[in-house]
Length: 179
Length: 321
Image 1 (cartoon, each protein chain N blue to C red):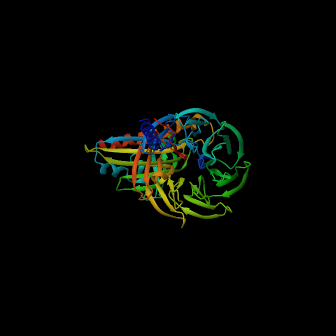
Image 2 (image 1 turned 90 degrees about the vertical axis):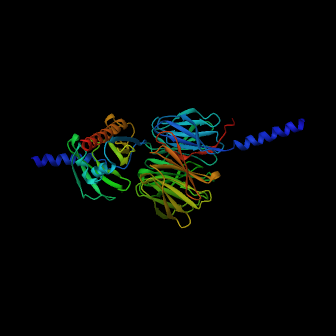
Image 3 (image 1 turned 135 degrees about the vertical axis):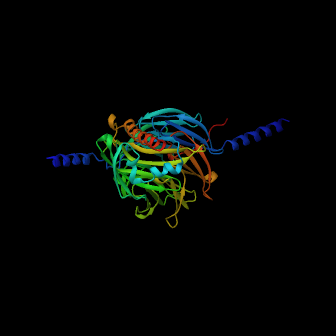
């Protein structure tokens, strides 16, 4: 019985998967940053592994990946505030020297994370006073591909979801490195 | 003495005329609901004009008197007066006006509707809607030929390009492009049609005589728009998800170079007078001026938020003082 409910749940998730390539007319932009009292190398050391975001992001319960930091690698993160819903992401570009990498979302349950055609860039930069700044930038469309979106799938909902995700991650990263 | 004054007057008149005969670029700032006007002599922004909601597409008449802007979210076309640099009219139109282009005689404005799968035709004199043409799914970029005979529109969600007659406004042919074609651009001699395919990361090249696909050129990730040099020898493609532009040699039809340009490059135009390529970077909210000869970046011009500059955004400066 449990298995049956489990399968139903996955079927439900599957039907909600946003695998259409269409999108709304206006791409949204979001930048979140945090200054951390630590050397950039130390900060980079914590975030550098694409497949281990769960070690520093408090809203991710688990990550499945091949543990490789190379373009094309896939990770599935389980987003805990939304019943561990899986979000499949791809590593688009990795630059250890510049301490940055770019990711995209390839599969997502838009009920839990209402975005489409999402890409993001996370980077670490050293400041003159010895601290570091982590900048997380996202570019994405709302989840609803047709005209006149319902409120839970509109631009505001998309921005809110991504903002919460970035802010929680950055805040915890700072705590982890400063304490 | 009278003659001298007259000569002086003529001299000044000519001087003024010459010094003000430069051009403007009109950049749609989608996230700040405005258009930045860049003086292409100084490469400085001289004005920011409020338009409709989430402007994207742009097209300027050759005489510079009218600048058309598409606003997909307020579902209207803004008309900017080139003398006043003011938004003088908003024309409500369809459900998602996005890609726009003028026919080369400037008589008609062609507007692709992202949601209604149509191209609408507006008479640029009366500013009235005169025709609706059903095309493929989610039409985006448009280009019209020099003979005022045909226009082309990329149907993004059908993976096709529609060929439409300007004589009778009927779809004549459907060409199969790559995956998710977004923009179409004719070579300056009109012999070739280049199509940027966002999902297959390539450019389809068609012969406009027989509509045969000649080749497919691999470019960077998520190509968006294409601009040719005036002599047609090279084409430049913006790759949104790679922060680069690809340089295509049009003779060999090969991608010969990739240049880092800034985040989310989108709209791109060639400015013949200065031999510069103007590239609109969405994420960085800037226009990059790239020297087309040595491929050096000359300047980065800060514009409004989230600029797209989708279309032909260059036109003459009509402001005399």
